[in-house]
Amino acid sequence: MESNRLRALLKQALLTFTVSLILFGPISGLVLAGFSFTNELMRAVLLAAVVTAGRLALSLFQISSLGRKLTRRMAGNGAGVTVMTGKERSPLLVLSLLFVAGLSLPFFADKYLLGIAILALIYCLLGLGLNIVVGLAGLLDLGYVAFYAVGAYLLALGSQYLGIGFWGALVLAPFLAGLFGMILAFPVLKMHGDYLAIVTLGFGEIIRLVLNNWLEFTGGPNGAPVPAPTFLGLEFTRTAKQGGVPIHEYLGIAYSADYRFWFLYFVLFLVVCFVIYAVERLRVIPLGRMWEALREDEIACRSLGVNHVFTKLTAFMLGASTGGLAGVFFAAQQGFVNPTSFTFFESALILAIVVLGGLGSTAGVISAALVLTILPELLREFAEYRVLVFGILMVVMMFWKPRGLVRIKRPAFFPSSMKEGIGSELSFEGKAEAGR
Image (tube, rainbow, N blue to C red; front, top):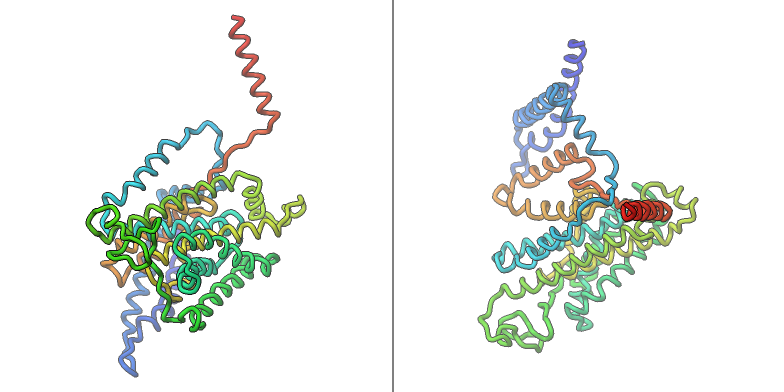
């Protein structure tokens, strides 16, 4: 028994070393020097040896008693969803404290931290939107960044050609992005899995290439400027640039560049809270139930009379609308947009937020968005290894929590007959107590 196990470990080590050497050889074993290259194969051999040693250590740990216990516990983390019993305490107090803490953040954070908070909230919006499409409806979308770009360019180009301001773009962006979501959804209604992912990936690239090559309209690689946001004619700049009044002059206070960040943060925070409430309400109404049923088994849904066309269209359009909202805030914060901000990497990052947070879990998506936006800033001093650390953490997460940071909690629904039975039992017990 031990000899077989040892033989299997040696085969695994040899295979790991060979594959690692093949991968690391061209990357780190050959160093370019002008038009020639130098041989550094020993570096690749050392890296392959380190990977092999780590794989052997992990295998030995897995066959130990502690490793077997942890493996069983991790396997248990992948089990289904958590169905609520109806006896849980209301999280209203905790949510109220979080809401107050979120509103008070600008009074304690500086401009740098507030910028990170705004970026985290933007990714929260993007994650919540993609969670409708991927997490609830089960439709793999790799081109979600296209709707993000639609919202950002609506503000930039709308102000340039139509005089649309921040508030106008905030109202129009969900409708325009939803229209693009409908245009994408119609051709892919009969596609599933990898085919759907490829088509949506192509859609995202088409939008980026159009923005990059339509020089006369979008500005191409040079991008387009975005006007500063205003509030009731009050501007957040030192001097009026859009025919309004600077807010510091109107209030009679000293000028500060933080006022614009405060304004964006407060509006974005309230919009995120509204979207969270809307998504949670959508999950428990029949439409949300149809999304989840479609995700589990589309054939069974169609056999039961569920309109799969309407269900998919609503998922794509609502998810796209949320992405358009996020794009408006991104453009307003940056003050400038260009196509390099809307690459496939952004779509992959948003998808990672949804998967790591937990498919269908609102709280998980918010937690993952905060982690994946704040973590790169914390690792800025290790810029050369930041992506490596990021990848290692993702792999560890997939082993530790394969269903994401937060498992889905599904509310319990009782049939009306059961409720009546419970009510009659309680009334009978109450009468008996009164008789005694």
